Length: 358
Ligand SMILES: NC(=O)c1ccc[n+]([C@@H]2O[C@H](COP(=O)([O-])OP(=O)(O)OC[C@H]3O[C@@H](n4cnc5c(N)ncnc54)[C@H](OP(=O)(O)O)[C@@H]3O)[C@@H](O)[C@H]2O)c1
Image (cartoon, rainbow, N blue to C red; front, side, top):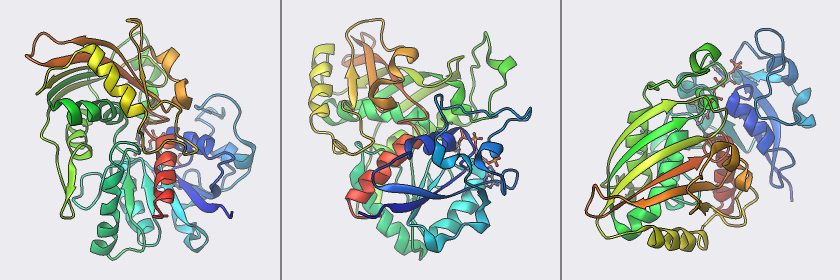
């Protein structure tokens, strides 16, 4: 089988580096071109990822894959789109708008940026949660007269929340949600949070994050009807904070449901969803989509971030919530750079490939 030829754009950033790792020896996709800003263009990849003091900043951990080290980083305009099947975009969100528009005119774009998430004809996809919304991509392509489309993932804080709410919404009717996040430093990108700001500290505010979580969760859990997404009828309140953890977001969640639920029913629910996950068997899918713990000391970022190669969503501290007539509280862990961005985007590409969309 000939592999699909892909480019990673925004390849030098925190998520770009994770893409490089996730696509090493991929059975279906081959990275043939890479691009970033003018600051990096023309340099070998190893040079382009050096920080201001000339030190190679490889955020992923482990070895930098050989295939990428001497590949030249291009300017976006120098990409040869005629030699590509599709694009992974990890470009900073403001610049992403124009860049993804230009790219989608010719090719499918799978994106971790927020540039297109809130457009009516654009689904926000989490493979395994709302695969059926991928049908909207065809409508988007026609509407915009493009040869490709843009398929964004959600914000990395939305990912774990939407994944854990989906079964609760479908089976018990989730109505209202309160969430507080404890988000990792890497979620802010390679220059997002200063060391002085985050060491021995908690930052109680992440610009624009809470609005993103509210809007995106309702859209993802909505239904595609007559070519449009009808948002899920859930009210969401959230507080997003940044904590001194390198990778992986932890969230404390309170959910009010229509029907009565308790921890043992929740355990059964996630177990039955694990047995029927659409992405099962895809190269980047974890063995278990959900990990459910009764041990009250889980989830912990250091323990959970490698589970399922960073693609498993962990749920723990599940208790009946007495504030509501029916409801639960729980904590979740989701890896922001794996399931929450780059590797999740690769899983999305695998799902779309299987559906014949790329
Ligand atoms: N970090 C996460 O956990 C996470 C999770 C989900 C989604 N996201 C989203 O994913 C995207 C990338 O995030 P990140 O954390 O990797 O950010 P980052 O570390 O700041 O990296 C940004 C990337 O965009 C490139 N870029 C910036 N301006 C550009 C331009 N004008 N033209 C072309 N390339 C340009 C940068 O290239 P240079 O190195 O050359 O400047 C770099 O490769 C963002 O949209 C972010 O919101 C991030």
